[in-house]
Length: 419
Image 1 (cartoon, one colour):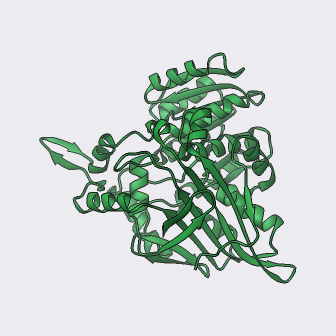
Image 2 (cartoon, rainbow, N blue to C red):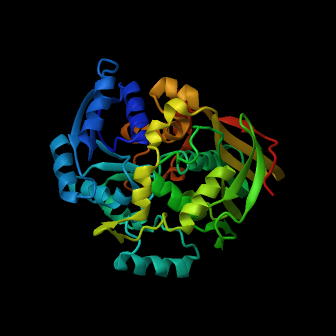
Image 3 (cartoon, helix red, strand yellow):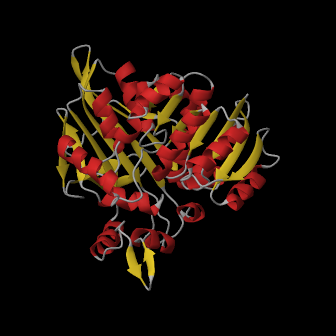
């Protein structure tokens, strides 16, 4: 018997909400809240009579702490599921602390305004001290650790697929497959085709910032930063085939480096087609990926937000996307004194996802782990005061939940390694 407040009603949130509704023995009451209440109402109507979960809706501006506090105090949930934008992580965490309620999200904090002088000063100090320049990092949310500990509350960060499941795979490998892990390569392949010349599979602002940023990886406990898209490899993915993949900075590298300090190298690769890269480089060259406001015809507009309005809504890609995703982790290390390799991954079919929850596989592979992370907190399996990432908890019950709710693992003990 649990009562949850879900903030957000986009592509990922809609999958998580549908999955919560499937697990109505745990999720008995749910409020869906968003800036656009009509989207919440439409989804609630679709789920009517399909679940025992009692679903209500609300309107909220997740940038406004007072509005969040009023909503949380009015609904009194056992858990707030933040499936809105990473820009809003801190305001929602502040509201959860004020209302004494557990918190979870799917991606770490990053600022909407990267020109804000206060944020910029801290960011530039971090770049100099740590050696990577991506706009997103865990430091802002890790700073809440003591506050959540003192309040006796749990905050679970990044319970999506990557981050999220990939970190769980690392904890699982460490617990069951290795005595020591030497290297981790996280591989994210989307072999889907939506038919558009250019579109992003999740929020365009977040996606394009991530992809256009300098790449980085961790080696011997230190960051190594490289120009964006400068390291390319081809890999033959099970269920998808050969794809070009590029080394990116990704948030789980930071937390894995902290929690698995013995690992000598941690990298993240993601696949991209040439058409996507050509479009992105052209947009970047003409300034359309900028987050700095410009004056246009007497109005202040942010170029990347204007671009977002022009691109297809990721939530609309479901009915036209075909193909599969393959996301997982390749490890090297030792077991019982012998060298060992191990690959754990998931294959997800876009069309099958749409049949089940009216979504493409990118939203599905993030939405299902969001529900599973909430399930872990609500059932007490992942419940301890403080701020944590997925790999800091026992991986076994999370893996079991993923298997049950649509993301079964596959394994290889002789994978092709990435050079």
